[in-house]
Length: 185
Ligand code: XMP
Ligand code: MG
Image 1 (cartoon, helix red, strand yellow):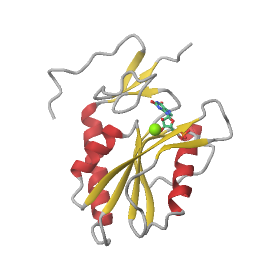
Image 2 (tube, rainbow, N blue to C red):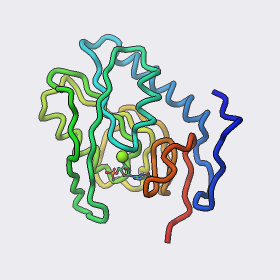
Image 3 (cartoon, rainbow, N blue to C red):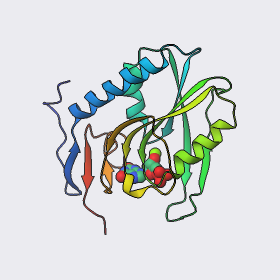
């Protein structure tokens, strides 16, 4: 991919590029190859469920590299920030039926684990054939709930990151790279 003409510069909020666009692209390719191989012999169409909004770029890139039949769906959640109980609320459900289907949850980042824990439990009640997870970024220092990530992009330190779908108050989602922010006051 040639990004050389228009790589957006870091602004004063951003301390450094943590993962550049080419590195992301190579890793997403690897994940897509692994997922395609793993699901090649399963029955039915793979159901990808992207968690809005943060996963929208990751799911778009990943899905277009898959060589297995798949459909794309989305779910939207809200978590009560600052609430240690891990309360997660469903804002918009999927449209597809999960019964007897292989479901792959596509998430931007694993932090406390509350979001994925909620989703995995919720989806298992819908009698899918299987539920697995593909997560672009993992912050292992932040986990409160144990979660198995089946397909992981990158492990990162406990810093706030933006770009490639991730935001800070809706800013920076469409940066082509993942950048680290300076700690906010
Ligand atoms: P939990 O704690 O449920 O959180 O695993 C997952 C959600 O937290 C958000 N999150 C971030 N978003 N930069 C972001 O833009 C970050 O560094 C970050 N850390 C956590 C995100 O919505 C994720 O789905
Ligand atoms: Mg998210």
